[in-house]
Image (cartoon, rainbow, N blue to C red):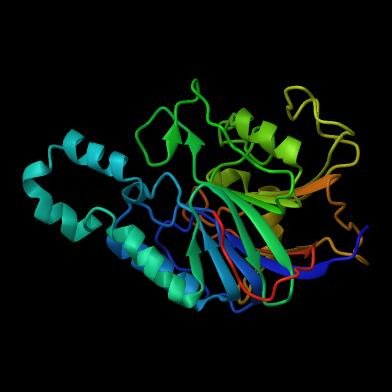
Length: 315
């Protein structure tokens, strides 16, 4: 395996306007929030989550929206006001949810503290540890409802993930991986799986399906299928589920201080990640269906060294 720079990621999703309890005091190179920053997209919830992110010990903090964060999806926000017949009560709407674009402005201002809100697309960074990081971000999930950043399942969505992407950050999971609902139905984003299977990033992190919390190190078959699927493109014999909710319960021993779920896939580890041959999938949904806190993820992977020494962003 080619040499690289060991890089630590702290990954969470679906905090829904709540803080982490207890406060997590681990150090990481990059923190990632995979969306659903809020429960009802209220402006107070955005402020709580921004403070949560500010409190994390990481040089770079990457954030995407989720379907609950509908005020970041202005057309949907406006539709909800019309559907609720609240045009005559805009003062109440503004008090609870903020002006149009106000939540986005709060996130943009938070860039001063290292919090970067990512639009859909590819973004490039040089990290303080000297590593180069390319991420693809997308908040879009399949849904027939009018929540934010949702596309109708029958129409699909194009996820343009380049082969050179290191980490994919989406709100929802790809079909077939850590996506079982409580009713044992898959979340069904086959288009996302197709794109990830072709690009084969080092890591793909997401949330949305709370009961799908866990991590899986997937080994790919030699070449992607014409239309990749979790049936045809995953080598199940060489893939391994690292953690899931059934095993999470054993970790809750009453001492929750600095409780995280950790996994490392660097040179010298038991399962070093082979770029292009494997992808680490992480469902980092924090809130359980019962409202309890599931564990954040602390993940070590190796990234390529950068020729630059200046942190940069390109969309």
